[in-house]
Length: 172
Image (cartoon, rainbow, N blue to C red; front, side, top):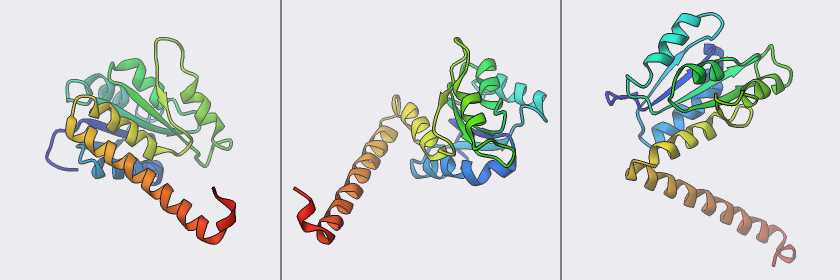
């Protein structure tokens, strides 16, 4: 990323998850929010996971986006260790059962260990949610998100106009 101190950590259980998690990085780049991105496996590098989570706040992270497939323990384990908010991205991986195992593993956290969960493979939404959290105390980011949402509305309005041209009698 840049030389700015990372505010958001993007972690994933394997580099094979990067094709999904890249969308979170892309949206944070769009909003000019500094982030770090790395692999932290709950099962293959548990000590690295503990170190990452215990030092996250000290390093200045405000939000962690954690993507994981299969059993998807990474987001929940990170959330169990740190007080930094965690957003889980369930990933449909090669060993996944249509992604439901990942969704439920991240979604069904016990009381006291919350993980915000986005839809399957929805790293872009995780990036937007992380940006919104940062935007609660950063007016520049808040404005960028507001502009982004206006752009979303404009895109839909343009699509409506296109449909009206194709089927003029179908719209009020």
